[in-house]
Image 1 (cartoon, rainbow, N blue to C red):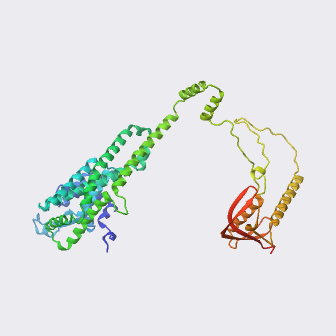
Image 2 (cartoon, helix red, strand yellow; image 1 turned 90 degrees about the vertical axis):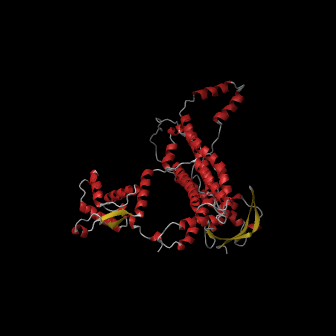
Image 3 (spheres, one colour; image 1 turned 180 degrees about the horizontal axis):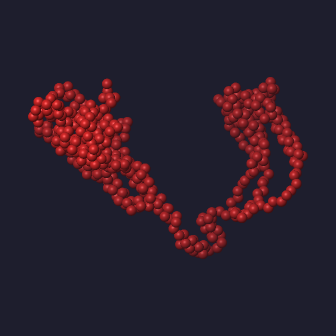
Length: 495
């Protein structure tokens, strides 16, 4: 089973019901481990727990139960203490001393770092880290040129220096960019208080970019020469030093894994600076992100300045404007200046009332103009109302209905004029009215939404549309010509 699929029982104490007790106990073990004290007696631990005001009434039985539980979770290792046994009863009664496991040490170390981290990212853009990495890579290259005639300890030190500086660069820059791009920092940049730190931020980022551009080219040149094949002998020196450390496990079975590990570490370093054929290098992304941060800060400063300018008095601007008008030679020049400053004063607007006609194909120019009554723009204005009689519009409705029917009949006759044996073919038409062109195009549009390409017209007819896309024809009309695919309209009732 893959190790990533296993449950980590060592972290159970972080979310247990008595997490406060467990975490306090293991934090004490962690601090003692850092001071090189590995084995802790229960009596010492009980005294420490009772010294905390929150656990003043902590019982010895409770301590032994929780220590046993931490042993089950693999957080502690219990070792029987037989050095201070003075009687047979003390010897028979098992007394233990406890040591925290490596898992527990790393978990507590991680939690300590998380507590220092806080709610936001930290990190920094340190220029010196790139210089140190370049120096470490230069030292590595020099050792390769001298045929690796030093001790293995010297080579492992150089290797650790290279990846310590690289790790610092990778984590610090990523955390600082995440800090700049966080929502909390973004909101602070949009306040006027950010203007005080604007120069400090931009100078910090600009200096980092300049130093990065100087050193990164040298690092990329070194990494281009230091390939994995050239470092193969150096990797063997690292494996030799690693294998010289006494271990109880079988070291020979781990040599291949160690070599793969070193090659993958080196590949990640090269890819971070050089990239690959399918992926952009992280160095180029870092440069782009830093430049983008500078541009974003500049935009925020500009917006803050615009907001401040918005509330500034325009008195001087108006005085300068009046001075320009005063210096105009005549009215014509003053009119031109007014058009530039205030815009045109005689713009005519076209406005129509909605639903003035039921005809979908009517043009705007065919409609009668609408008279609009301009109302005063004051809050106190009220329209005058007076009682009036009810007017019957029956005659007017009848006239409008008859006019509508006459228009439909006239349109139907126009369509029938172009019909030939129950069909209309566009390629056979010489010239048509604009109304006929609009009707034919509307039938084509409606047929696209129908599976059988049959359209029901406004005149009660069913028309089947057949389009020949390979054949393009010219449809002439009074207001212009239209290139379109040839189409045939078959009237089913006429057939």
